[in-house]
Image (cartoon, rainbow, N blue to C red):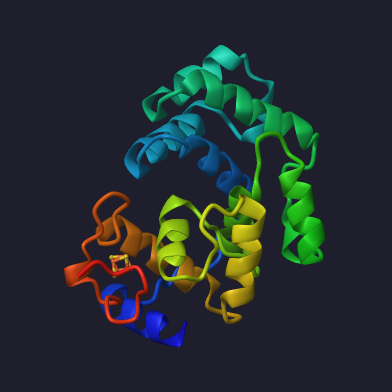
Amino acid sequence: MRTVRERLRKVYGVPGWPPHERPLDELVLTVLSQSTNDRNRDAAFAGLRERFDGWAAVRDAPVEDVEAAIRPGGISQVKSRRIQQILRALDDDLDLGWLRDAPLEEARDFLCALPGVGRKTAACVLLFSYGRRDVPVDTHVGRVATRLGWLRPGAASPELHDEMVALTPPGAELELHVNLLRHGRRTCHARVPRCRECTLRRICPSARL
Ligand code: SF4
């Protein structure tokens, strides 16, 4: 773990993103990010913010209006319904500030009980909003960590997340998530990993040299 961290740091640096303290924004962003790239996700999010005056207005709007606002992000029919389901499940608790100090398990369980929210989304909300101890394991993070031998191939999302948190030194959650994700996007590709130019090739049990 220490060697991997050091080598990835040399390539990608250390992300300096302070917690943004906007958990509901993060929840909506993760819905919008499904099956699209960051640019389209951000365009859809900007569309929502421009069209509606706050999350209560999104919750109470006709679903067709929400769908029109997020259309640049793709599969807007599905996403608009999901966003409204989440907002309605929250009732009037559209602040979610209590997630900052609540016991971690309680905060995670609350988020995972929302419609369509799983461990990865909950981890994004907790880590990016409040710097809490969780590590989102998306497709890139999961692939790289599995190839490094850290995670069991084929493990389900709860196991992947529990293992990643157990492996991650306290305080390294954001750095590890971001740098494994960058490495998965840039070098450790799903179909043809670029092992010959990988900074981890000498310590990776899956290296194809
Ligand atoms: S050596 Fe290959 S499989 Fe291992 S992390 Fe690097 S690119 Fe991925």
